[in-house]
Length: 255
Image (cartoon, rainbow, N blue to C red; front, side):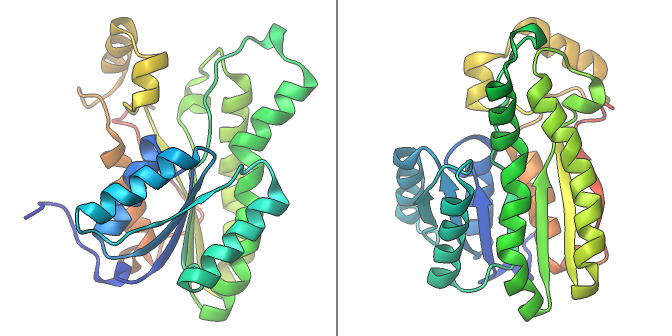
Protein backbone atom coordinates (compact mmCIF):
# COMPACT_ATOMS: atom_id res chain seq x y z
CA UNK A 1 0.00 0.00 0.00
CA UNK A 2 1.32 3.44 -0.91
CA UNK A 3 2.16 5.79 1.92
CA UNK A 4 0.90 8.70 -0.21
CA UNK A 5 -2.63 10.08 -0.33
CA UNK A 6 -5.48 8.81 -2.44
CA UNK A 7 -8.09 11.43 -3.34
CA UNK A 8 -11.67 10.16 -3.73
CA UNK A 9 -12.60 13.34 -5.62
CA UNK A 10 -10.18 12.42 -8.42
CA UNK A 11 -12.00 9.17 -9.20
CA UNK A 12 -13.45 9.56 -12.72
CA UNK A 13 -12.45 13.26 -12.83
CA UNK A 14 -11.51 14.27 -16.37
CA UNK A 15 -7.96 15.59 -16.50
CA UNK A 16 -6.08 17.05 -19.47
CA UNK A 17 -2.27 17.30 -19.45
CA UNK A 18 0.04 18.85 -22.02
CA UNK A 19 3.49 17.41 -22.69
CA UNK A 20 2.49 14.10 -21.14
CA UNK A 21 4.67 11.60 -22.99
CA UNK A 22 7.91 12.02 -21.06
CA UNK A 23 9.57 13.63 -18.05
CA UNK A 24 7.38 15.25 -15.42
CA UNK A 25 4.40 15.03 -17.77
CA UNK A 26 4.54 11.24 -18.03
CA UNK A 27 4.69 10.92 -14.25
CA UNK A 28 1.67 13.24 -14.00
CA UNK A 29 -0.27 11.06 -16.43
CA UNK A 30 0.54 7.92 -14.45
CA UNK A 31 -0.23 9.57 -11.11
CA UNK A 32 -3.69 10.66 -12.22
CA UNK A 33 -4.39 7.23 -13.73
CA UNK A 34 -3.42 5.68 -10.39
CA UNK A 35 -6.06 7.90 -8.77
CA UNK A 36 -8.74 6.58 -11.12
CA UNK A 37 -9.03 9.78 -13.14
CA UNK A 38 -9.99 9.87 -16.81
CA UNK A 39 -6.84 11.25 -18.38
CA UNK A 40 -6.15 12.72 -21.79
CA UNK A 41 -2.76 14.08 -22.72
CA UNK A 42 -1.02 15.58 -25.71
CA UNK A 43 2.56 15.47 -26.86
CA UNK A 44 4.42 16.22 -30.05
CA UNK A 45 6.11 12.81 -29.64
CA UNK A 46 3.28 10.57 -30.81
CA UNK A 47 5.23 7.32 -30.48
CA UNK A 48 6.22 7.89 -26.86
CA UNK A 49 2.67 8.94 -26.01
CA UNK A 50 1.19 5.75 -27.44
CA UNK A 51 3.83 3.65 -25.68
CA UNK A 52 3.03 5.27 -22.34
CA UNK A 53 -0.71 4.69 -22.76
CA UNK A 54 -0.15 1.05 -23.71
CA UNK A 55 2.21 0.45 -20.79
CA UNK A 56 -0.23 1.85 -18.25
CA UNK A 57 -3.05 -0.26 -19.69
CA UNK A 58 -0.86 -3.39 -19.58
CA UNK A 59 -0.28 -2.73 -15.88
CA UNK A 60 -4.01 -2.76 -15.24
CA UNK A 61 -4.35 1.00 -14.89
CA UNK A 62 -6.99 3.10 -16.66
CA UNK A 63 -5.70 3.69 -20.16
CA UNK A 64 -5.16 7.39 -20.84
CA UNK A 65 -6.14 8.98 -24.13
CA UNK A 66 -2.90 9.87 -25.94
CA UNK A 67 -3.32 12.56 -28.60
CA UNK A 68 -0.54 13.88 -30.85
CA UNK A 69 -0.37 17.66 -31.07
CA UNK A 70 2.09 20.51 -31.33
CA UNK A 71 0.96 23.01 -28.68
CA UNK A 72 2.47 25.83 -30.74
CA UNK A 73 -0.36 25.40 -33.26
CA UNK A 74 -3.12 27.01 -31.21
CA UNK A 75 -6.11 26.24 -33.48
CA UNK A 76 -5.06 22.58 -33.73
CA UNK A 77 -4.41 22.45 -30.02
CA UNK A 78 -7.82 23.81 -29.11
CA UNK A 79 -9.44 21.31 -31.50
CA UNK A 80 -7.53 18.53 -29.75
CA UNK A 81 -8.73 19.71 -26.34
CA UNK A 82 -12.29 19.71 -27.66
CA UNK A 83 -11.81 16.17 -28.99
CA UNK A 84 -10.60 15.02 -25.58
CA UNK A 85 -13.65 16.55 -23.90
CA UNK A 86 -15.94 14.90 -26.43
CA UNK A 87 -14.33 11.52 -25.77
CA UNK A 88 -14.09 11.66 -21.97
CA UNK A 89 -16.46 14.38 -20.83
CA UNK A 90 -15.98 18.02 -19.79
CA UNK A 91 -12.45 18.71 -18.58
CA UNK A 92 -12.43 19.38 -14.84
CA UNK A 93 -8.66 19.73 -14.34
CA UNK A 94 -6.17 21.21 -16.79
CA UNK A 95 -2.42 20.83 -16.25
CA UNK A 96 -0.36 23.09 -18.51
CA UNK A 97 2.95 21.23 -18.41
CA UNK A 98 4.49 21.27 -21.89
CA UNK A 99 7.76 23.18 -22.04
CA UNK A 100 11.32 22.94 -23.35
CA UNK A 101 14.24 24.32 -21.35
CA UNK A 102 16.71 24.77 -24.20
CA UNK A 103 19.93 26.59 -23.43
CA UNK A 104 20.97 29.63 -25.44
CA UNK A 105 23.07 32.77 -25.15
CA UNK A 106 21.40 36.13 -25.35
CA UNK A 107 23.73 37.23 -28.12
CA UNK A 108 22.55 34.31 -30.25
CA UNK A 109 18.84 35.17 -30.00
CA UNK A 110 16.82 35.96 -33.11
CA UNK A 111 13.24 37.25 -33.13
CA UNK A 112 12.11 33.93 -34.59
CA UNK A 113 13.82 31.89 -31.87
CA UNK A 114 12.47 34.18 -29.16
CA UNK A 115 8.92 33.83 -30.47
CA UNK A 116 9.32 30.05 -30.54
CA UNK A 117 10.52 30.01 -26.91
CA UNK A 118 7.38 31.81 -25.81
CA UNK A 119 5.18 29.61 -28.01
CA UNK A 120 6.60 26.42 -26.48
CA UNK A 121 6.78 27.60 -22.89
CA UNK A 122 4.01 30.17 -22.37
CA UNK A 123 1.47 30.95 -25.06
CA UNK A 124 -0.36 27.61 -25.11
CA UNK A 125 -1.16 27.85 -21.37
CA UNK A 126 -3.64 30.68 -21.75
CA UNK A 127 -5.26 29.28 -24.89
CA UNK A 128 -5.71 25.87 -23.27
CA UNK A 129 -7.36 27.64 -20.34
CA UNK A 130 -9.55 29.55 -22.78
CA UNK A 131 -10.65 26.24 -24.29
CA UNK A 132 -11.65 24.56 -21.01
CA UNK A 133 -13.12 27.47 -19.07
CA UNK A 134 -16.62 27.31 -20.67
CA UNK A 135 -17.02 23.68 -19.63
CA UNK A 136 -15.74 24.42 -16.15
CA UNK A 137 -18.17 27.31 -15.79
CA UNK A 138 -21.05 25.07 -16.83
CA UNK A 139 -19.97 22.45 -14.28
CA UNK A 140 -19.50 25.02 -11.52
CA UNK A 141 -15.97 23.81 -10.69
CA UNK A 142 -12.52 23.60 -12.22
CA UNK A 143 -8.82 23.48 -11.47
CA UNK A 144 -6.17 24.91 -13.79
CA UNK A 145 -2.52 24.44 -13.03
CA UNK A 146 0.38 26.09 -14.81
CA UNK A 147 3.82 24.54 -14.44
CA UNK A 148 6.41 27.21 -13.67
CA UNK A 149 10.07 27.03 -12.69
CA UNK A 150 12.31 28.48 -10.00
CA UNK A 151 14.87 29.23 -12.72
CA UNK A 152 13.58 32.78 -13.15
CA UNK A 153 13.54 33.35 -9.39
CA UNK A 154 17.18 32.30 -9.21
CA UNK A 155 18.15 34.34 -12.27
CA UNK A 156 19.48 31.30 -14.09
CA UNK A 157 21.56 32.35 -17.07
CA UNK A 158 21.80 30.66 -20.44
CA UNK A 159 18.07 30.27 -21.14
CA UNK A 160 16.46 33.68 -21.11
CA UNK A 161 13.57 32.62 -23.37
CA UNK A 162 12.60 29.84 -20.98
CA UNK A 163 13.02 31.86 -17.80
CA UNK A 164 11.10 34.83 -19.21
CA UNK A 165 8.23 32.51 -20.11
CA UNK A 166 8.21 30.94 -16.66
CA UNK A 167 8.23 34.35 -14.97
CA UNK A 168 5.24 35.39 -17.09
CA UNK A 169 3.32 32.30 -15.95
CA UNK A 170 3.36 33.72 -12.43
CA UNK A 171 1.52 36.88 -13.52
CA UNK A 172 -0.80 35.03 -15.86
CA UNK A 173 -1.85 32.68 -13.06
CA UNK A 174 -2.65 35.56 -10.70
CA UNK A 175 -4.77 37.44 -13.23
CA UNK A 176 -6.60 34.37 -14.54
CA UNK A 177 -7.44 33.28 -10.98
CA UNK A 178 -9.07 36.67 -10.42
CA UNK A 179 -11.07 36.47 -13.64
CA UNK A 180 -12.52 33.00 -13.20
CA UNK A 181 -12.74 32.82 -9.41
CA UNK A 182 -16.39 33.94 -9.34
CA UNK A 183 -17.18 30.81 -11.37
CA UNK A 184 -15.52 28.57 -8.74
CA UNK A 185 -12.56 27.85 -11.01
CA UNK A 186 -9.19 27.78 -9.29
CA UNK A 187 -5.93 28.68 -11.03
CA UNK A 188 -2.55 27.97 -9.46
CA UNK A 189 1.02 27.43 -10.55
CA UNK A 190 3.29 24.61 -9.46
CA UNK A 191 6.93 25.67 -9.48
CA UNK A 192 9.49 22.87 -9.63
CA UNK A 193 13.14 23.25 -8.71
CA UNK A 194 15.96 21.04 -9.94
CA UNK A 195 13.98 17.93 -10.86
CA UNK A 196 15.80 14.91 -12.26
CA UNK A 197 14.29 13.71 -15.56
CA UNK A 198 15.70 11.66 -18.41
CA UNK A 199 16.13 14.88 -20.40
CA UNK A 200 18.10 16.50 -17.60
CA UNK A 201 20.26 13.40 -17.25
CA UNK A 202 20.89 13.29 -21.00
CA UNK A 203 21.58 16.96 -21.66
CA UNK A 204 22.41 19.01 -18.59
CA UNK A 205 23.16 17.06 -15.43
CA UNK A 206 26.75 17.05 -14.16
CA UNK A 207 28.39 16.34 -10.79
CA UNK A 208 29.15 20.04 -10.51
CA UNK A 209 25.50 20.98 -11.05
CA UNK A 210 24.37 18.40 -8.51
CA UNK A 211 26.76 19.84 -5.94
CA UNK A 212 25.65 23.41 -6.54
CA UNK A 213 22.01 22.39 -6.11
CA UNK A 214 22.70 20.47 -2.92
CA UNK A 215 24.65 23.41 -1.53
CA UNK A 216 21.71 25.72 -2.26
CA UNK A 217 18.79 23.49 -1.25
CA UNK A 218 17.54 23.03 2.29
CA UNK A 219 16.73 19.38 1.49
CA UNK A 220 19.86 17.48 0.55
CA UNK A 221 18.49 15.26 -2.18
CA UNK A 222 17.69 15.68 -5.83
CA UNK A 223 14.01 16.16 -6.55
CA UNK A 224 12.16 13.69 -8.78
CA UNK A 225 9.00 14.11 -10.90
CA UNK A 226 6.91 12.31 -8.28
CA UNK A 227 7.56 15.20 -5.90
CA UNK A 228 5.88 17.53 -8.38
CA UNK A 229 3.07 15.09 -9.17
CA UNK A 230 1.96 14.88 -5.56
CA UNK A 231 1.46 18.65 -5.43
CA UNK A 232 -0.40 18.61 -8.75
CA UNK A 233 -2.72 15.85 -7.55
CA UNK A 234 -3.60 17.80 -4.41
CA UNK A 235 -4.39 20.94 -6.40
CA UNK A 236 -6.63 18.98 -8.77
CA UNK A 237 -8.51 17.37 -5.88
CA UNK A 238 -11.24 18.87 -3.72
CA UNK A 239 -8.83 18.96 -0.76
CA UNK A 240 -7.37 22.22 -2.10
CA UNK A 241 -10.71 23.95 -2.78
CA UNK A 242 -9.67 27.06 -0.86
CA UNK A 243 -6.47 27.64 -2.84
CA UNK A 244 -6.21 29.84 -5.91
CA UNK A 245 -3.92 32.44 -7.43
CA UNK A 246 -0.90 30.93 -5.68
CA UNK A 247 2.52 29.60 -6.67
CA UNK A 248 3.33 26.33 -4.90
CA UNK A 249 7.07 25.74 -4.91
CA UNK A 250 8.39 22.18 -5.06
CA UNK A 251 12.06 23.12 -4.97
CA UNK A 252 13.61 21.53 -1.91
CA UNK A 253 13.99 24.98 -0.41
CA UNK A 254 16.32 26.48 -3.00
CA UNK A 255 14.66 29.93 -3.08
